[in-house]
Amino acid sequence: MKPSDNHSPIAELSALPHASAPPQLWAAIRDELDTNAHSRARSRLTWIGSGLAAGLALVVGMTLFQPAVQPAGDSVVTTETTQESSLPGELVQIRRLSAALESSLRDKRQGAVSTLALEELVLMENELGWLDMRLGSQPGDLELWQRRVEILGDMNRLYSRNHWQNQIRLTSL
Amino acid sequence: MDFSQPLDELTLAALRKRCRRTQERVYRDYSSAAWTLGLRLSGCEAQAWDAVQAGFVKAFERISQLRNPAAFGPWLRRLIVNQVMDQHRCSLEGLPPGFEAVAEDSALDHGLDLEQALNKLEVPDRSVLWLHDVEGLTHAEIADLAGQTVSWSKSRLSRARAKIRKWLDAYRPEPREHEVITDEAV
Image (cartoon, rainbow over all chains, first blue to last red; front, top):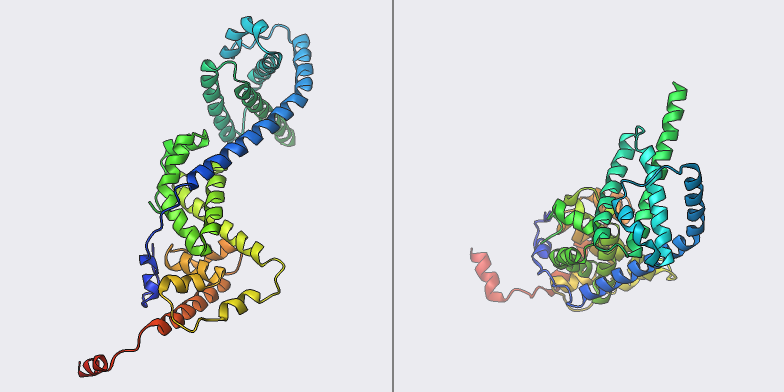
């Protein structure tokens, strides 16, 4: 604090006592955070639901064109595939989508990335690691899988965009 | 804890993962400073509640935008000040220009103490005075927060100080006769 006016009594402003926040304020903040999180989750579910058909088409396409590629790095997915028959349909689909995106990402990871993109990718990789840790103990959590698919999609887009920009740079040299 | 206290990296990482327990701990750490700021700027508990609640919710939901944990306090302060300024702008919508100044100039015929005098200032004057003289912000920072110019901030500050002095002088009791004599003797 820097009281810049030394003329009393304005200089006494900073001596006014600090007030304590009302005890119910935290509960109100927590409730608003919860409400917003639920509404975001609902809108994500809607988005996932409408995008699932397109995602499945992608999975089918990739399976046809790359039959040999298996999502070996996706440990959560591979350990769970044998139990898929007993899982709800939505969960099975989203896990397949996750595996397909991870497989596509594996090829793209070999390319060069810019420093800016690298920073974003590191953050995404961190969140992905954290999600995989959570999925290890909660493999049936649909919301975690949805978040995983979103991150993998973002990473794929980032790598693709970066690759495209690199090509432009190289051809302009 | 005031707004200048930094967060550590671990706390910031936990906030990014939306850990509710960490959010509550951070809220407890900054709640007194935040509530005092909201209350002093808005001059009303109901508006302070709205501003502080919205400030914390935005801070926790947009935490991924914050790169430097040391900047959390100033960032939270900025969010709360913006909320108060927005409330003030909304409250003036539909009113004729100059309405606020007319209402504020109708000074009481009796004096005020410092806290009452502060509350009697209009919101922009009170905000500039508090942010400059108590929170230690520069005119450039205040102008940036309010979306105004540096000269706007300076003139608001000067006006706010003059009004406060006037109201407090009216409150100060006249010196009794023997005190005047004593002063003259000294």
